[in-house]
Length: 272
Length: 225
Image (cartoon, rainbow over all chains, first blue to last red):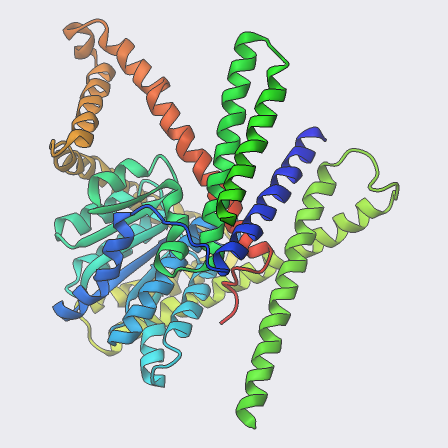
C-alpha cells in the first residue's frame, strides 16, 4: 500500500506541475529549448521531397495505442501530424506505414485533419497513402523495405516502437542514401538507429515532438514538468545511495528539504 | 445557419468524446489503484467491488473495439493492394500474391488457430519466412558496424573504442591477447553501459507518464479531429 500511495502522490505532483507549467507557457513564459538536430532536419524533409518529385515515408513502428507502447505510438503520430500539415501545404501525400490497426485509424484521422482545407480528392489520396503493412515485426519490416526500395520515396522518418527489425529498414534506407531520421525509446534498438540513421531521436526525445515541431503549450509545459521530476528522482536516488552508504538516517530530512527547495526554485524561476 | 449548426454539433461531439475519454481513463486508473489497495475503500466494503466491476467492463469493451479495428486493418490491406493491381504499379504481382495468400489463409483458418491448416501455415510458411528475414540481420549488422565504426569526432571515437573492447572481450582470442580484456568488458557492460541504459529508461518512464497524463486530463486528444 505504501508503494501505491507513493505512486499516486508522484502522479498528483506530476499532474500539478504539468498544469502549472502549461498555464505559465500559455501566459507567455516560454523556456528556451535545447537544440535537437533531428527536429531541425524534419522541417526540411517535405521541401526536399517536393524538389525531388517524390514523397516521404513515415513509419509509426510496430506499437499499438492499447498497450504499454502507446506513448511511443503517440510520439510517432505527433511527428506525422507535423509532416502531414507541411505536406498538405505543398501538395504531396506522405506514405505512412504501421503494424497495428488502432494506430492506422489515428494516423488516418491525423492525415484527414491536416488536409482539412484541401480538395476532397486530395484528402482521399492522402488518406489512401496510410497503409497497414502487417502485425508481425518481421513482415512489417519486409513491407517497409519494399516501400523504401521503390523509387517513390525521397526520405524516411521512423519514430515509434521498434525492435531488432529496425535495422532491416534502417539499412535499406542507408543503402539508398536517402534522408533518414530514426527515433525509439527502447535502449536495445538505439544502437541500430545510431548506426543507420542520419539524425536520431534517442529515448525520451521522441516524446518532445509536440513541443519542438508544433509548439503546443501543454507539450512544452510537460517537458518542464518532466525535467523537474527528473531532478527530484535524481536527488532521491543520490540521497538514497548516500544514506545507505553512511547509515545516517537523518540525511533523509536534508534530501527532502533539498528536493522541496529545488522544485520551489524551478517554480519560482518560471514565475519571473 | 447550417454551417453554425454543423459547427455546434462538431463542438458538442468533441467535448462529449473528451469527457468520455477522461472519465473512462480515470475509472480504469481508479480500478488499478483499488485492486492493489488492501482493506476497504473509505470504509465502504462494496465500493471496491463496484469500481472493479465497472473497470472490468470498460477494459472488456476496449478489447472488443480493438478486435474490430483488425477487421478495418484487413480492409485497408485489401484496398491498398487492389489499387496497386488496378493502377498496374511496378511489382503489382506481389500484391496479387498477397491477396491470394490472404484468401488462402482465411480458408485454411476457418477451423480456428489450432486447426491443422492454420498450424501448417504457421509452422511451414510464416515461421521459416520470419526466421529467414531475421537471419539477414547478421549481414545488416556487419554493414551497419562498418559504417558506424568510422571515427569522425570524439563521440564516435569512444563508440568505436568501447565496441572494440566489448567485441574482443566476448571472444576467446581476447583472453589470449590480454587476460584483463574480459574483465574490462564486464565492467563496461555492468557500469557505464548499465548506467546509461538506466538514465534512458528513467527519461522514457517520465516521458511515458507525461504522455499518459496529457491524455488523461484531455490536453492531448488523438481521438478527435
